[in-house]
Length: 346
Image (spheres, rainbow, N blue to C red):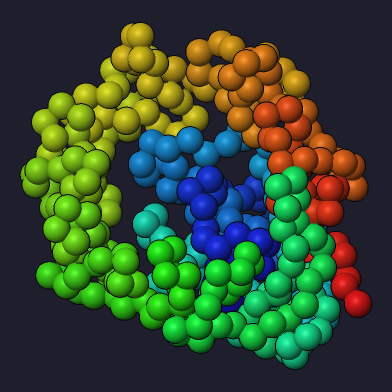
């Protein structure tokens, strides 16, 4: 089980950031609540550190206590599901690795976060693939929501038919969109092929030149770069020179957007003045029409210029996130906002 699938996500997202002292006080790594507190600690620490490094947007500082509390709740309920094989001790080791991981984090690069699959046999009721020996919990998925419960099922072997919605191929295989068959994923080094139609990918740290379908090294400082020619970790592509440069983080009021100058975390580059300005965080149902506005939950509705309403756990929801979104780490399940692990399937 890869990083953060514990919470229904396959990778550590770029919206991660640093933890409040009040939440890192516990040294309890032997219980679900203690391990989840450590994990939430790492989640925030990674986000803020990497947002600061690359001038990215983290989230409103005032929101972090809410985010961490929700993450601990979701994590604890997930760990308590029958058959779940993730132990508090194992999760704590994973969390410690995240805290020092590079900002180009790939879950495949952290073996400590590649947890064992669950213990439930095929055919058993499940809420998450983490509970199943196969790692796959097949559910009914509609246009408006997914079902809370499903059944553990065997993953499809290479060469098998994966055309049915919700089908999962075995580990290190994927469903070919053309043939609807499971094909093995091959990870090649520099000069190797990365033809996705053949299930080929590049090894971690490389990129695929989609024109030639060949794996290449990322550009070093001074190398030519573009959206299709990425730079090495820690560098960015200067929008003026189109070369890889070390990013410079500007503070509020300083010039940005040229020669690798980015705005520090919590700021944005104003397109009109080309200077760094503070982000304006807008609460649910608030007006997000002003330049630099960011919704605390969801995205600004392009028609109404309002942030979507926040839907509480247990309340009705739909796939339309423009008017209402579930709270942090919850999703629309059986037409209601639910945290992962809240339903014990039988």
